[in-house]
Image (cartoon, rainbow, N blue to C red; front, side, top):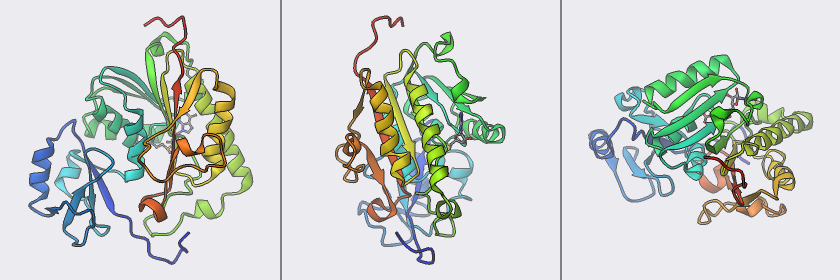
Amino acid sequence: LPTSDEVISLPKYVRINTLCANKDDIITELNQQFHLTTSNKLEEINQFVYDNDIPDLLKFHPSVDLHHNPLYLSGKLIIQDKASCFPAYILNPPAGSQVIDCCAAPGNKTTHLAAIMNNNGTIFAFDKDKKRVKILQTMVNKAKATCVRAECKDFLSINPMDNLYRKVEYVLVDPSCSGSGMINRQQQFTDEVKSCTDKRLEQLSKFQISIVKHALSFPNVRRVVYSTCSIHEQENELVVEEVYSKFSDKFDVVEVMPGWKFRGRDSYKNGRKCLRMSYEESQTNGFFVACFERIKQSDNVEM
Ligand code: SAM
């Protein structure tokens, strides 16, 4: 890992918000200030490229700041690190789906899901923190994500048998984690990482296991994507193994993005099916994604 006084420069990523922006118009506008290039290396500060892995994601030079750009201020561009775009892309709910985003605030992944669904269907977006739900709602409004129903609720208190969620087939689980993969603005690893004790990791791991298990308990759920911005196995591969050991009669851990080189730890049964990202390997924040899929629909599915 880089030391705290080493300078870390991550490329800047923005997602074109296709809910309220036309891709060609965005590129034309950006080309007035920057220059779209096809080379993946951003040699000049004013160059940008389409990302190779995530549709509608643009990559800029690390020193670019788009926070004051009118395209960002109007919601047409969403500033989102590449790593944080993988979960919604992998969950990939078709238009018309019923989706739960169980730990949704501030809403980067929620609005990404809405864009993938083209605002067609419903996203139940929960977060238990009142202040963060306000930010979520602001972000949802700004992004014109009209299919989102944001609510301040503890996901663990949601009854999977409630008729309201009967048709939910896709769930995104992006719970609180140690944040040990995040490289902060001062380009140092966060203080939280340094002070993340074994006890804290154990508590987080327990909570993460309970929340993924709860997601898998919805009667018609087909696919559940679990993600963290942690580098710790205890919050990543270990959570997946523990959940899988209890749900393997109904769910498989499926290989996500086989073309992506950086995989989970292969000392775990399902490790290589999962995806990892890191500053060293992919020049992103540290991240982990796993995907559970139902083996067969239960006999009493009533849609
Ligand atoms: N998915 C978000 C995004 O992409 O913008 C980031 C989510 S953040 C990593 C984790 C969130 O989980 C926090 O906002 C926290 O308040 C919320 N949270 C923690 N426990 C929860 C629970 N039991 N039910 C609902 N939300 C919870």
